[in-house]
Image (cartoon, rainbow, N blue to C red; front, top):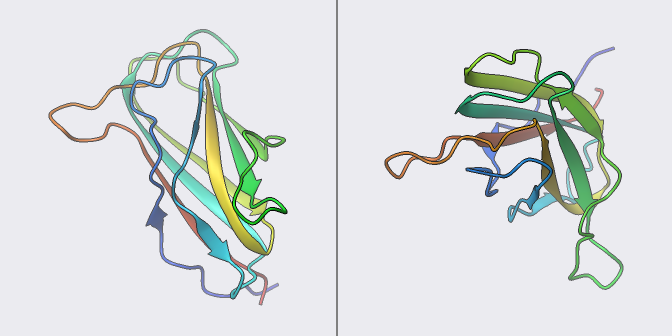
Length: 139
């Protein structure tokens, strides 16, 4: 199977810095898939230096479609992926989620911290945690 060229990686505006364990953050970036009607989404998550809790540490990723009123997004939807944090050592973490099925139209993404510890906080005005996305379809 061939693939279309993916869109460029685009940062998501989302408040992940210092996000407490079991807390969620919804991105303010609105992703418009109304024209391209791509089928899939990749998410790249770079976490700043922190020490996750014990086994089972993970980040949940959610896709939140625009609701029928044309203005609201759900608080959270069923998780599209639960990305394990395999290393419990202190340090930055690089996570990825691929081939997430996405709706046509408009949506946002959200994350839930299930790492067992707060995520790294911003330092010197620079964000510690970066979430980015790209979309694509089979060609």
